[in-house]
Image 1: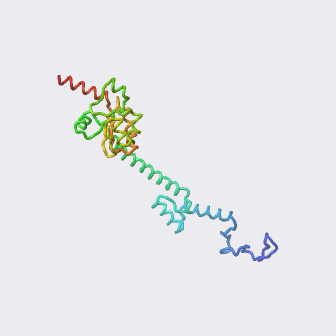
Image 2: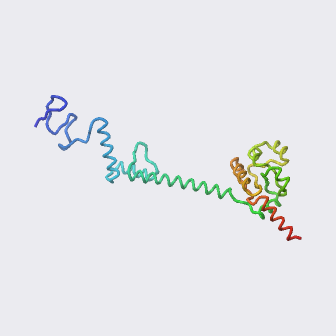
Image 3: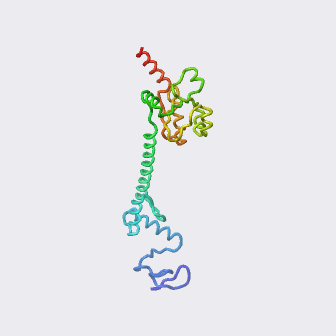
Length: 226
């Protein structure tokens, strides 16, 4: 049976198209132009989500599960995409939690009064008092401490050894030395600790009790001694 082509006057057999014969006499899946390609892509994605996946697509899905990311050129949709995003987010959060845990446990350990006293006696640490000079003159200071006001800490730790010695009358600490920061009650010393760590002084700690706790304990011990 012959059929007239809608795009011209040519006569062609029924069951064929201008681009060839329909497979098995049915409708052709090969559609010319961008509309045809979009339809085919949508059908392929529908097959992936519904589980009717061809072997290459199954291999790609397995690669997504193994690598945690989609191979280049593969668009992942639906449930598969949701699972991929969840795995990536989980990995990222675990990595952040792990780094933060290591950072906190390795650095942020407060020094107690007794620990500080023993460390000062051993002379293995440098105690830096970050209060203002007028506070130290008025209230006093922990014996053996070096006064470097908080607003000078960052600059002081980056000085060359000669300038540090001239200004603070102490040998400049190296990044491998143990530093302990103190203030009146622990707030400024915590900021100084953060500054020191950011500059590479990773063996730094701070005395959270500060001068107030130290003076209280010292006064109590003197009373007991008398």
